Amino acid sequence: MPSFQYHFFKPFMRMARWAQGIFPVNHANVYVFFRRMADRMVNLTMHPPKTVHVESASIAGVQGDWIFPPNSPADTVMLFLHGGGIAFGWNHAMQRELAYLATFAGLRAFGVDYHVIPTHRYPVAHDECYAVYAALVQQGQQVVLIGESSGGVLALATLIRARANGLAQPLLCVLISPVVDYGFKDEGVWQSDDPFAHPRFLVETHKHYVAGYDTTLPDLGPIYADLSGIAPLYVLAGEHEILRGEVDRLVVAVIRYGVRTEVAFQPHVWHSWHAMAPHLPEATQALADLGAVIQKRVTKYQEKS
Image 1 (cartoon, rainbow, N blue to C red):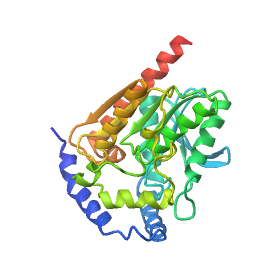
Image 2: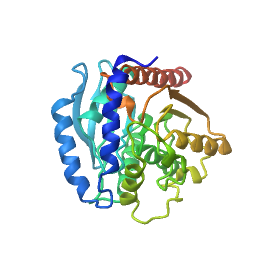
Image 3: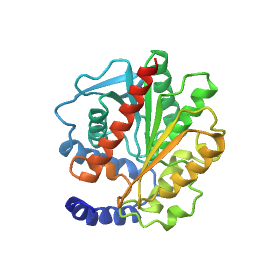
């Protein structure tokens, strides 16, 4: 059964969906004002747990934050590519989410603060995420790559680019409520009754980043690409969320190329529910379970080495 907190927060999610529905999505510059307000609010009210150490840094010239849980090993890193429609950047809410996941996994993590619209469009975010991944691999790090929402395409594109350039694949690629096609060619997105995410906001926001490019390109629509030889995938999504159909489309694509994939659906919840840890028990449990999956994969690799 859903928690008390689930029932408490759900009406607020409906309000957020309503606000997204009336957002002036055709005007890219409006995102700047809204983003600044949102960042100001979350940066004042949301903070990672005190048990982790946060350190701003640059990898391959790309800014981001290191998250260090206690006693995390130095040779393995979770590389986190956040969501937000390539319109909302790295902030304390995302930092907190990653801090909890890093704690549950027992691994240090780097959250990439890639550039967003309207001043930066395709392929900037793609190039920056890939550059960070390539730098970590070239340093000899074992990487668990994580793509959340819009970061799902960024993560899959990174795998395809790494394969093309002869770089090692990550130990595991985790996709949380992933977008898998910036063209959103699945009509199911428009039929969704996700309590939080509005279809128009989701689809139109990504168009600003795509900037007219062909969304069947491997970078923008990786489900249309040859996915053979990419890392194993672990996909986590909400049962009733707007991107539920995107997961199904991804599964069809990876089966075609024999990619080892495991999918888990959290009952009842909406898009981005996992970011509400520790206040929503369903979110905390999802991150704890995901941390255990990641740790199991890392342990298995270490035992083989």
